[in-house]
Image (cartoon, rainbow, N blue to C red; front, top):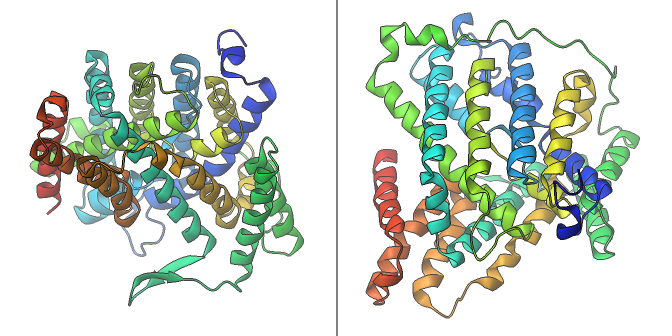
Length: 442
């Protein structure tokens, strides 16, 4: 096992990989609670039952698809990157496809299935891998730094440190709020342990935050440890009914499939590059075994749609596991195991609240922006597209949109500077795709 995952070459151990995998799971365990709430449109009153998915079935589909995707990523691609149904894409599925257009959720699952199959075919042709490897090194560093700022922003929001402000869009939250104070406590203890060089500091920080939350009655002690596994029957294979319905074959559904394709492609590509760069796994600016890594999310998306959930994608929270020492796919195997166990221990997940995970996201963001130092800021033609990639991600709340903004300006500044010959032909293709992306958004 150690030889297969190259423990000695990467300077890691079973303990570091286990702690890293557990940390990644804890950082993204919220999806097991949030995904069913989103896909069932739990916050929308008076919704016809036909448009509302079964919460228990979605929970099981979420856990199983996350376990499968993480397992494939770990065993085949050997990366410490976990997968699960993506936030943002699940909201698009629920609020735009189902609630907005009134399409049955079975149609939404069918659209996810089609996008997953198409992605898998693209992966087998090697096109997805060629696109990622064609991205210039400094733009990859910009993507990594942008994701760092993005997840730090998420962390500050989850902590209540940064909140909505109608006058200035964002503002400082109430720092005297008990939950915000709990998150600040977690941030301080994690920073202290990280500064002292303690392996697994992010994980230990989350544990101490949970203990403090329970002690001060900010986190409810679970009423039970083990609960029954809900039935998957309400959603399993339900997507196939859409293919026999003429209403599925519309331009609206085609646009839905293309949206799933675009956002998943560049969210996954950005996450893979960012996390691999943080873990020191990039080689000469390229992502080894990129094809295998990309096929993991494609396969997981297909299976996830069959089970009953939206698009499965790579999670930026995997960087918290990397910060705790994870360097190999064994960590993803550990994460997959915890997702399977979660099927039986759902009541315990209630202790993994937003203030618990917020410090981990903030710390990981600080680690990821270190790639800023690898960008040549003295060259304006590089500085502008890199900066736009970095800053648009948190401001637009989208990894894909940040990549789009920077990659549109990259060929423009390089051509004007007289460096057109240095631009890979793929970058011109991406330029056209991203221009169409913004036109489509408008």
